[in-house]
Image (tube, rainbow, N blue to C red):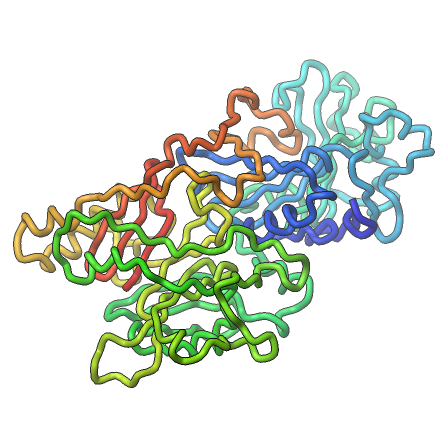
Length: 503
């Protein structure tokens, strides 16, 4: 890896790989630096991809990254092989090749060397051989704020009355086998909220590396209200409200920045839902964009397609009025949504181009559009789950969400026949083209038990080879589209919602 790639910032990052950053930004940067990261393996649960953690392994670099499922933000950075990455902390090497204890490539730093680097610590937890599924060795997990190391220990020499610093300095202790970077004061305090606590660092890699003054504020989530009003909750600033049919193209550029790309629209098949009538046409609309957005550093996520024309000086479209008067999608891949800009349908409205439709992308692993967009989270603020009274969210399974939608919109139809026709799912068939994320190797059905595996979870309790898939979109292909007044849901076969269109 590069000179700065292995610098440890405890509680924050290793090199540019930063806690809290989105899966979308991280994968794009990894793919852009293919010489440094020649192999990427993605593991996820195909049955519950939005609630289970997503794991990215870099086998050539000895690194493993763990993301939470609902927000897809980096929670843990693990080092599994100290010899595949040159780690440094405050200018000092974690592994010194000439030292006698480093002559075996399978060994990491001993406890004495780690304690010299990071200083004394009172935080150490011991796991017995039964807990680690080892025959003779237990495991010490010793942590400092934001960083922890795991040291195998000969269980026969363990004495509960002896301080762990003394035990780990003895010959019964082995060199470290793994290291983790996380956001907490200690590993013990981190475990209960590791994937649920709100990260303190931004999800945008650009903002994390270069500061927020140079880039648009990131969108935390969108609250969808009645009357075509959408509240985009921002990380730092006040919410940005979009009123469909009223918010202008210039408003979007001012508040969200220039789009990553523009797609000039020809397909109008989703108009079936605007007219509230049944039809034999198959609705299919997911705004096509350029496959790769992998520019390095400051330009990450700010690519523009050949079909779009932006003035590099002011960041506004430079096409003439006649050309941009047609309907076009503003692709905000870094925010996770597309916005259809078109002339307002209200004849009494001014002639400005306005936002008329928004597509929120779920970035579900294994789906057709995976990693073309950052995951966009939303809440249907005015519709609640019937059984619990909670608002409907982007993480819910379609089976639960659809029941509440049907109940809420029951008075919007003139007859049961009309309701049945409009709420019947219609299959989307985009073909079997490869996903732009196909340079990653997908490993499906990765069901891990994080608490049981402690720090030494390098060997899952399943056969990794049996999990390899060949990008045939098994179980996730041909999603269905379900329409409700003002909304259309793209649903995968596992019940996950891959896209919500609001119009």
